[in-house]
Length: 193
Image 1 (cartoon, rainbow, N blue to C red):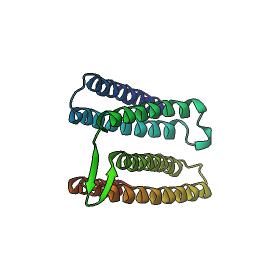
Image 2 (image 1 turned 90 degrees about the vertical axis):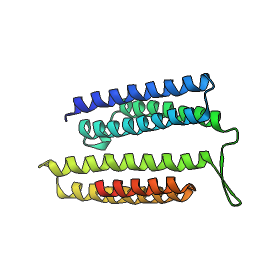
Image 3 (image 1 turned 90 degrees about the horizontal axis):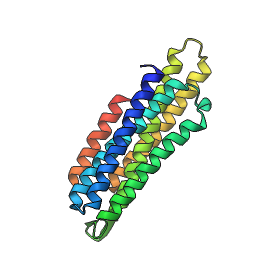
Image 4 (image 1 turned 30 degrees about the vertical axis):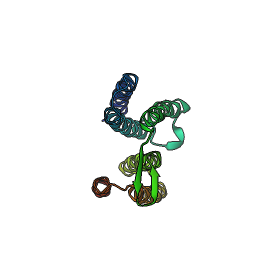
């Protein structure tokens, strides 16, 4: 895939995110059940992860040197992230009325679990970007060994950040099924790195 194709894929992913957010907002405006709004938000969440992933891929292909990324590209992903963050707030506001997960004497607000999940998503997206950069450096015959070693060190550091975010996210979950799913996802992501 070349940079232009990656940009097209990123644009499609952003369009799907916008459509998912619109669908969630319609459910909220129609005062549908909280479960329906949560399901719609789950689609928004998947779309956001796809946008972040496609953006990282495009940036890695179009701008192999991280310092060369123009401000317009940073602004583009920040706008998409703002749309996603606003959707989180609207969804949380809608279902927040009495939405808390209680375990024994501990109360963990649903919002805190989402924050940890979002941090994890960010760290995974950053890891994928660094992986793509390392791959492009390794594949470039003109890259010197110091650049490759520096990229490998950045990759190792980011993997540690991912591991920490993953542990914190899993620790914040209280539902056994969610914990099992998160552990499976962690194994799956480690296998692909």
